[in-house]
Amino acid sequence: MFVDIAKIRIKSGDGGNGRVSFRREKYVPNGGPDGGDGGNGGSVIVEVDLGMRTLMDFRYKTHYIALKGEDGGKQKKTGKSSEDLVIKVPLGTIIRDEATGKVLVDLNEPGQRFVLARGGKGGKGNWHFPTPTRQAPTFAEKGGNGIERDITLELKLIADVGLIGYPNVGKSTFLAATTQAKPKIANYHFTTLQPNLGVVEAVKGKSFVIADIPGLIEGAKDGVGLGHEFLRHVERTKLLIHVVDVSGSEGRDPYEDFCTINAELFGYSERLTKRPQVIAANKIDLLQDETVLQSFMEKVGKEGYKVFPISAATGEGLDTLLNYVTTQLDTLEEEPLIAEDEYYDEVAELNPKDRWNINYYMDGEVYCVDGPYIERLVYSTDLSDIESLRRFQNVLMQRGVFEQLKEMGIEDGDTVRILSFEFEYYA
Image (tube, rainbow, N blue to C red; front, side):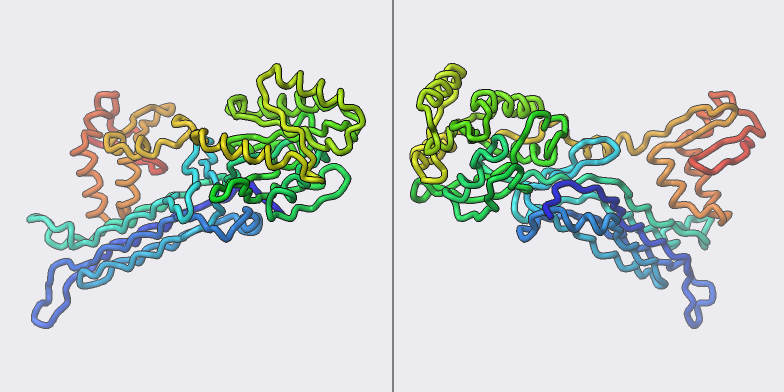
């Protein structure tokens, strides 16, 4: 089965916790702190695998979780960092953040890798926290949390030329006649139920990849028939060969077919309105009336399209068409598939200034404090340990949190909510 879209959930590993430990050696009964740091959690990385052709594997496994880092040990020993979790995907896969719909990465190069979620950083051991007045700290940092996110994987085949047209107009026959591909061919609609790829070498030393896109019908842009399932594969192509049954063997008017398919393409993506298109007037071997071909060529020619009468079954006209396409591809520049504003702004998400933001607001009568910095501080604090809690309060004081709450009008006994934890405020 050809699967070209999938949704999965990923989570990078949490960082290992720092260790609380003290030297216990002979003749050193009250040694200093020596708790080691926790190891980093494993990141989730995606990598292109040229051996994969579909996203079928993601139908059966939808959760990918990297391992947690090892906790710190005694004698300042750092815990072992976990190995990264590598997810293999086919070439041409676009990955989106499900929450925002933004593109995380377009994997369009062999062997390309991308970090989808970085592992949590290991927490510091207690040997980092002694001071002149606190020489035996009984707390350590917790490891940082891993990142959990839902993502969408969308496969868009990488091909130079897209073969489009109504069902049963001869696209599969065209592909079989011009490449080494062996698509299923029969005289009924929707013979092609998945895109087929082939390599064409019309000019010695120059080749291009052509994709046979399953037959479109009216309403495809709205999901009718095969619809969106295959229209996405047209977007990467540099040029389109629009195959039309000029013989009218299906009882349809070839020009109306041509207009209908283009309406579906252009309705699906504005980008496709600018895609060069060459018309292959197929099945001339079955043509009963030459005036039908002439009429079609005149109508299409007025719209600026170049028409090549061919017979995919007999091979007539194929060389001329393929030579022209090869020449055209040499002059076309590849357009970026993803616009800049479609990408998830990872830099903005990790902006150093934003990292220190602290948000203050009221929820009824509760004073609320949150933000990236506060979140990291809370999760690195052992709130059950009095010294760790004291350090937590000192950091809040140094960051001006209490001063800000006073300006908001807080009084003794009022409730402060920091993330999911609630405290009573006393100056």
